[in-house]
Length: 126
Image (cartoon, rainbow, N blue to C red; front, side):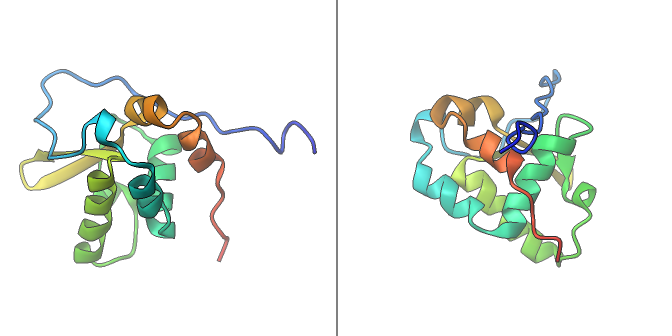
């Protein structure tokens, strides 16, 4: 197998800006459970959301609209909540808008190499 086939895309981890709103409730690093994380990532849409945040982030956190997903708002709310409650993403409320980013440092501390696998995953072209 060529070295290029094993290359893992670079995960973007942007610094946290000052003055952010408090995060919504989420599990502490020590309370992150592998089965909860893997359960949340078992859905292809959620896996796509996390991969996009890891590889394409343009700023520290992003609203649902940034992802360009053609899904009802209620469906997206459910998926983003599942990611937050599993401890994969951190969400903050900015007025009427919630923005998300991946808890890169926390997940790398608890489950080394997991985010590299997510970044290397390639969704089906269909």
